Length: 438
Image: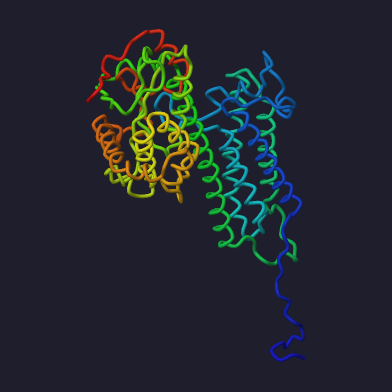
């Protein structure tokens, strides 16, 4: 006989046996199925979502070949507004359903049916499922009496919700606990952890939906803005409303293109700016077209603290070799004329901004110029670049950025819109505000 066991019977520690495991796993599977169907509904709710064979099968097709579910999802009942203001962002109801099914699924995954002594905790789940059942009844009534249009996939979701209610009721300990279920279940700590996780996952669904909805709205606004700025009529209208400015040109800075061109273009550029490279290519092609009636000259506005005293260009946002490149072009022009300047321009833009580790002598050799002559011309070239930078600052380029294109003395933001150039040429205007300086 063991000490401390006068009855001669060893104590058996209580052990836990999960009540009604079949009900637990059936409820978990139902919640997962409901979450998956709500995911399909959320995908179908997205603007521009395409009908898929799966949605065709589950939803059917309405009039005009449109999926039957989409009429319901596109209605006012298919989403909830985020504010009372007209036109506010709307959150698909199906994403709320995803959060609901995820929360119920977590409860059955970690807790499941309770023992009789802890049945009061089950009231939390019952309250949630009863609210969900009420919502399902509301939406079924809306489809039947208000919309008079049925979404088979929605009906399936509401049916699964009804099954969840039944399984939640079956999870209650209606009968007296068996002798084997000696451990009270669930513990307060487990309930607290599960409820916290359920709340967090529900909020995570809403947060993800908000991120997607706001991102989608931002993308739609961006697309609408792009359609506007790429509209040639808007580009010309915006050009017309710009104030006319004087753009003095130097004798050494010749224009590329026919001298009698109807459009005189001046572009302020940076050799390490990708958009500047695109603008240079576009304008070069226009100037090379004899029917385009466009001539252009390039001026310099390097985003480099070495020749541009804007403090923004001295840090990570600056182009550390842009000043050297601009001076090299002007030095090439002083040494070899416009042809040499053009070769240097093309060579530097071909580097696609990767100018680190190369010096002016390397660039001179690449275009067939004498390196010593180029070096001798660099001080004068630096002064010319400084003049361009000062002019650019007076024109406000530091507030807008490069490239900045002027057509007949007015800023033209639509330089990348080919049809806008056609509109400008059709106007047949000349550039009276461009003058030559001594």
